[in-house]
Length: 358
Image (cartoon, rainbow, N blue to C red; front, side, top):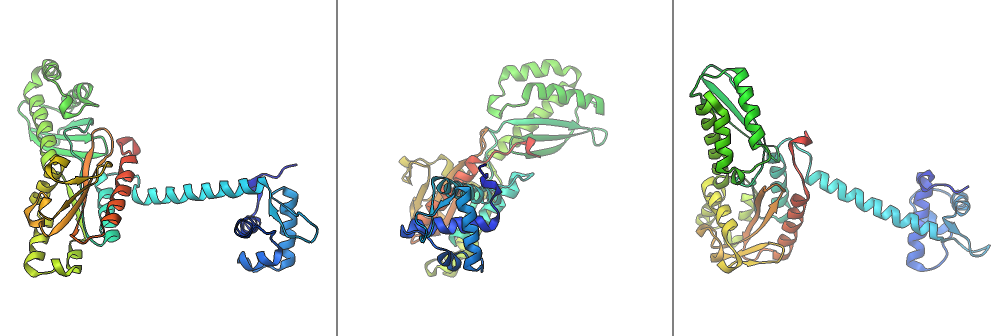
């Protein structure tokens, strides 16, 4: 009866892999003494011979001649190849789990990734939160925390949560808020801001009845939150102090200017918005994969004229797009940074974050 691969114990697996690896390197049959030196099991040659005899009976290796060592069979090669594939899958899974965890909020992921990016490159790094004007709304929740107030909670694809307390225009109670919530979700769930047409707004207002004032208040708040999020995204940074590693940037005035540009949210938003709108025709070199390189004065922010800026755009799906960037000296390791950004972009592009992940 054929013994299944998963019935091999750990000792046999180690010995089998050692035989195959040695045979692939030398092309010579492999004996027990050779394995005793390679396997790290601290087993005697006699014990290893017994294990090898079992592997012969199982069909993983064969002994060409009575006095010769063993060579792998097709079954042995198949086990070896499959184990390599499984190990590579495991490592990739662990790397992806580390970089792209199932987290409740996208913010936690972006903070993790920007720290990794700064540490891996030894330069300054930034990641913007995704734009919101093209992000689809998952659902809207209205409640009445106090008389005359409406608490609006807006959940977007990707577990991006926006909330605001509004001063009610008409009197509203808990039951009415729930009815309005259901009505709004029927019309808006699954749509982005750009997909909300005048006809949809008209239909909503017709169904709003006596709550038209409050409904308009909520719709205006939704629009303002999403439009504000488009031009004032969350931006996460790390590694600003890495600037001091490079003599050409460590001049007090230059360094202060760079760090100021790197830490002021308005200036970073300006950078992200301009990078988003720039194209190759604007003077920035870009690869076919969407990696853009700005050298010195090519960059969108004047304070970074002594640096190089490399950016990539990521997309989480459902219109959720953002920017990853690395800032360093003009003599930065462009090849490494571009490859790191490409890997990170791929990680984010392949990630999917929805409220259903909770």
